[in-house]
Length: 102
Image 1 (tube, rainbow, N blue to C red):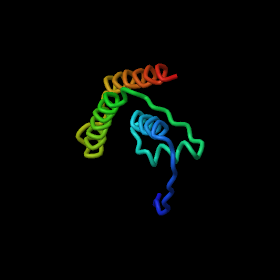
Image 2 (image 1 turned 120 degrees about the vertical axis):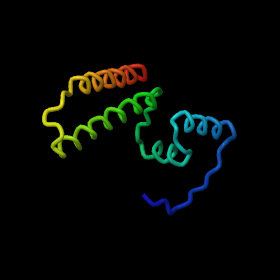
Image 3 (image 1 turned 180 degrees about the vertical axis):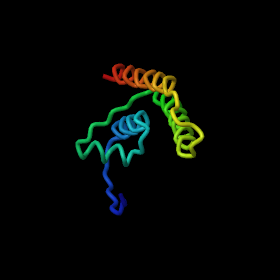
Image 4 (image 1 turned 45 degrees about the vertical axis):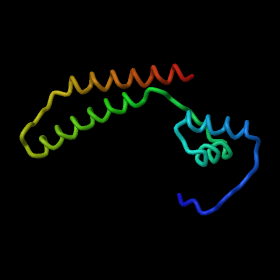
């Protein structure tokens, strides 16, 4: 969405520092953090997703390679047992991270 309006406000240094810290912890800019907060959006921070994201990308790449090989006719019935197991591990990791955040 295009950001075409400027909004200025005054606050204490302590409030500014607290808001800036919360924005940094959430991995967001102050503008995005304040906008989502003001619009009543819930901001959930889940630490540790970087490693899970790497695993999901690897699984996605493997599935893509298998899909290409199937479409080329080089393989007909790939064994996805390991892929399903890996996805289960990643899913369990995400659930564990979400439980820690709750």
